[in-house]
Amino acid sequence: MHDEISLERLAPIDEEEASDLLGGSSIDSSFSDDESSTKVQPKLVTNFSSLFSFFPNSHASYYLLAACLASGVSGLVVPAMSIIIGKIFDSLLKFGLEAYEKKLLRVEVQEFIWYLVGLGLGALISNGVLNAMWQRCADLQAKRARECIFEGLMVRELEWFDKRRHGVGAMLTRIQT
Image (cartoon, rainbow, N blue to C red):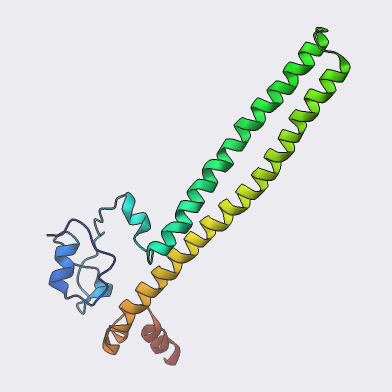
Protein backbone atom coordinates (compact mmCIF):
# COMPACT_ATOMS: atom_id res chain seq x y z
CA MET A 1 0.00 0.00 0.00
CA HIS A 2 1.29 3.48 -0.87
CA ASP A 3 1.78 6.16 1.78
CA GLU A 4 1.28 9.07 -0.58
CA ILE A 5 -0.11 9.67 -4.02
CA SER A 6 2.50 10.79 -6.51
CA LEU A 7 1.60 13.97 -8.35
CA GLU A 8 3.68 12.93 -11.31
CA ARG A 9 1.49 9.91 -12.12
CA LEU A 10 -1.70 11.11 -13.75
CA ALA A 11 -2.37 8.16 -16.05
CA PRO A 12 -5.73 6.42 -15.76
CA ILE A 13 -5.89 3.81 -13.00
CA ASP A 14 -8.34 1.04 -12.31
CA GLU A 15 -10.66 0.92 -9.29
CA GLU A 16 -8.54 -1.59 -7.38
CA GLU A 17 -5.37 0.46 -7.73
CA ALA A 18 -7.25 3.63 -6.73
CA SER A 19 -8.60 1.79 -3.70
CA ASP A 20 -5.04 0.89 -2.67
CA LEU A 21 -3.90 4.49 -3.09
CA LEU A 22 -6.77 5.83 -1.01
CA GLY A 23 -6.17 3.54 1.91
CA GLY A 24 -8.11 0.44 0.99
CA SER A 25 -11.60 1.97 0.84
CA SER A 26 -13.76 2.15 -2.22
CA ILE A 27 -13.29 5.21 -4.35
CA ASP A 28 -15.62 8.14 -4.94
CA SER A 29 -18.56 7.34 -7.19
CA SER A 30 -17.52 10.06 -9.60
CA PHE A 31 -14.51 7.92 -10.47
CA SER A 32 -16.28 4.61 -10.97
CA ASP A 33 -18.98 3.14 -13.12
CA ASP A 34 -20.96 1.90 -10.12
CA GLU A 35 -23.34 4.57 -8.82
CA SER A 36 -23.79 2.83 -5.46
CA SER A 37 -20.18 3.04 -4.29
CA THR A 38 -19.53 5.09 -1.18
CA LYS A 39 -17.59 8.31 -0.94
CA VAL A 40 -14.32 8.40 0.97
CA GLN A 41 -11.92 11.14 1.87
CA PRO A 42 -8.41 10.40 0.54
CA LYS A 43 -5.70 10.19 3.18
CA LEU A 44 -2.91 12.11 1.51
CA VAL A 45 0.40 12.41 3.29
CA THR A 46 2.13 15.64 2.44
CA ASN A 47 5.43 17.11 3.43
CA PHE A 48 7.33 20.35 2.87
CA SER A 49 8.79 19.20 -0.44
CA SER A 50 5.30 18.76 -1.89
CA LEU A 51 5.00 22.57 -1.98
CA PHE A 52 7.58 22.53 -4.75
CA SER A 53 6.44 19.43 -6.59
CA PHE A 54 5.18 21.44 -9.55
CA PHE A 55 8.43 23.29 -10.14
CA PRO A 56 9.11 22.41 -13.77
CA ASN A 57 12.90 22.43 -13.67
CA SER A 58 15.93 23.81 -11.86
CA HIS A 59 15.42 27.10 -13.71
CA ALA A 60 12.49 27.82 -11.41
CA SER A 61 14.65 27.25 -8.34
CA TYR A 62 16.69 30.34 -9.27
CA TYR A 63 13.54 32.43 -8.96
CA LEU A 64 12.84 30.80 -5.61
CA LEU A 65 16.37 31.53 -4.39
CA ALA A 66 16.12 35.16 -5.55
CA ALA A 67 12.74 35.48 -3.81
CA CYS A 68 14.15 34.12 -0.55
CA LEU A 69 17.16 36.43 -0.70
CA ALA A 70 14.96 39.45 -1.45
CA SER A 71 12.72 38.46 1.47
CA GLY A 72 15.74 38.38 3.76
CA VAL A 73 17.02 41.75 2.59
CA SER A 74 13.56 43.25 2.86
CA GLY A 75 13.23 41.89 6.38
CA LEU A 76 16.51 43.52 7.46
CA VAL A 77 15.49 47.00 6.33
CA VAL A 78 13.12 47.77 9.23
CA PRO A 79 15.59 46.83 12.00
CA ALA A 80 18.31 48.82 10.23
CA MET A 81 16.01 51.85 10.05
CA SER A 82 15.22 51.46 13.76
CA ILE A 83 18.92 51.49 14.60
CA ILE A 84 19.54 54.62 12.53
CA ILE A 85 16.53 56.43 14.02
CA GLY A 86 17.84 55.45 17.46
CA LYS A 87 21.18 57.04 16.60
CA ILE A 88 19.41 60.22 15.48
CA PHE A 89 17.58 60.41 18.82
CA ASP A 90 20.86 59.71 20.61
CA SER A 91 22.41 62.69 18.80
CA LEU A 92 19.42 64.86 19.73
CA LEU A 93 19.75 63.76 23.36
CA LYS A 94 23.44 64.66 23.39
CA PHE A 95 22.56 68.05 21.89
CA GLY A 96 19.93 68.54 24.60
CA LEU A 97 22.53 67.74 27.26
CA GLU A 98 24.80 70.31 25.59
CA ALA A 99 27.40 67.66 24.67
CA TYR A 100 27.08 68.61 20.98
CA GLU A 101 27.19 71.90 19.20
CA LYS A 102 24.47 72.79 16.74
CA LYS A 103 26.81 72.43 13.75
CA LEU A 104 28.00 68.97 14.81
CA LEU A 105 24.41 67.85 15.41
CA ARG A 106 23.41 69.01 11.94
CA VAL A 107 26.27 67.16 10.24
CA GLU A 108 25.64 63.94 12.15
CA VAL A 109 21.86 63.98 11.63
CA GLN A 110 22.32 64.72 7.90
CA GLU A 111 24.56 61.68 7.61
CA PHE A 112 21.97 59.49 9.29
CA ILE A 113 19.22 60.93 7.07
CA TRP A 114 21.21 59.93 3.98
CA TYR A 115 21.47 56.43 5.43
CA LEU A 116 17.69 56.40 5.86
CA VAL A 117 17.21 57.55 2.26
CA GLY A 118 19.52 54.77 1.08
CA LEU A 119 17.65 52.21 3.16
CA GLY A 120 14.36 53.49 1.77
CA LEU A 121 15.59 53.04 -1.78
CA GLY A 122 16.97 49.63 -0.86
CA ALA A 123 13.59 48.69 0.62
CA LEU A 124 11.83 49.84 -2.54
CA ILE A 125 14.11 47.75 -4.74
CA SER A 126 14.13 44.68 -2.50
CA ASN A 127 10.33 44.73 -2.12
CA GLY A 128 9.95 45.06 -5.89
CA VAL A 129 12.28 42.11 -6.47
CA LEU A 130 10.58 40.18 -3.67
CA ASN A 131 7.12 40.60 -5.20
CA ALA A 132 8.31 39.93 -8.75
CA MET A 133 10.22 36.75 -7.84
CA TRP A 134 7.46 35.27 -5.67
CA GLN A 135 4.93 36.05 -8.38
CA ARG A 136 7.15 34.35 -10.97
CA CYS A 137 7.50 31.28 -8.73
CA ALA A 138 3.72 31.11 -8.32
CA ASP A 139 3.20 31.52 -12.07
CA LEU A 140 5.63 28.69 -12.84
CA GLN A 141 3.95 26.37 -10.36
CA ALA A 142 0.47 27.20 -11.66
CA LYS A 143 1.61 26.66 -15.24
CA ARG A 144 3.13 23.30 -14.38
CA ALA A 145 -0.02 22.25 -12.48
CA ARG A 146 -2.17 23.14 -15.50
CA GLU A 147 0.17 21.18 -17.78
CA CYS A 148 0.02 18.12 -15.51
CA ILE A 149 -3.77 18.24 -15.38
CA PHE A 150 -3.98 18.69 -19.15
CA GLU A 151 -1.59 15.79 -19.77
CA GLY A 152 -3.62 13.63 -17.37
CA LEU A 153 -6.84 14.46 -19.16
CA MET A 154 -5.35 13.86 -22.60
CA VAL A 155 -4.58 10.22 -21.83
CA ARG A 156 -8.21 9.52 -20.86
CA GLU A 157 -10.53 7.77 -23.25
CA LEU A 158 -13.57 9.72 -24.45
CA GLU A 159 -15.95 7.39 -22.64
CA TRP A 160 -14.36 8.37 -19.33
CA PHE A 161 -15.62 11.93 -19.84
CA ASP A 162 -19.08 10.68 -20.78
CA LYS A 163 -19.39 8.64 -17.58
CA ARG A 164 -18.87 11.62 -15.27
CA ARG A 165 -21.88 12.66 -13.22
CA HIS A 166 -20.63 16.25 -13.32
CA GLY A 167 -18.99 17.83 -16.33
CA VAL A 168 -19.64 18.59 -19.97
CA GLY A 169 -21.40 15.32 -20.77
CA ALA A 170 -23.81 15.63 -17.87
CA MET A 171 -24.39 19.30 -18.63
CA LEU A 172 -25.21 18.61 -22.28
CA THR A 173 -27.67 15.93 -21.27
CA ARG A 174 -29.43 18.34 -18.89
CA ILE A 175 -29.50 21.10 -21.51
CA GLN A 176 -30.96 18.87 -24.21
CA THR A 177 -33.72 17.43 -22.02
